[in-house]
Length: 168
Image 1: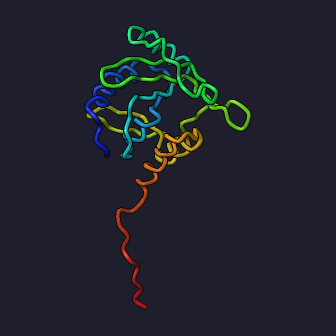
Image 2 (image 1 turned 45 degrees about the vertical axis):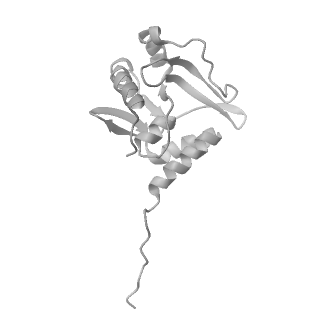
């Protein structure tokens, strides 16, 4: 697995227990932090949390003292959600409740697909499986997402190839 920076580790140590306690619906990390937890060689400047709308509202109440109200997410024409950004030691956390992507002329709910648990020092962190992370990032289509796709695909590539020799 790629090395977690101390900043990202500190953020996950603060955030993940709260997510397990306060989210009634399934949640997961997406984006760069999720790719990093699967072992991709990427940097993670923030933690993106995909939740239900109701759980996003709950987190907005629980973390109200950490809220960054002046922050406006980029790409608002492509993404919409019940969104809030929070300050945590280490890295900001962006909560996206009921995230939708505008594609093919309409808004479509972002579905994470099959989840798996990544372990971070005893914490169980749900992230989309490798194939679903690639699918999500490709659907987002931004340059940074496509770089993450390449890093995730590299996880499937063999480290070296052995020639196949036939005895016939």
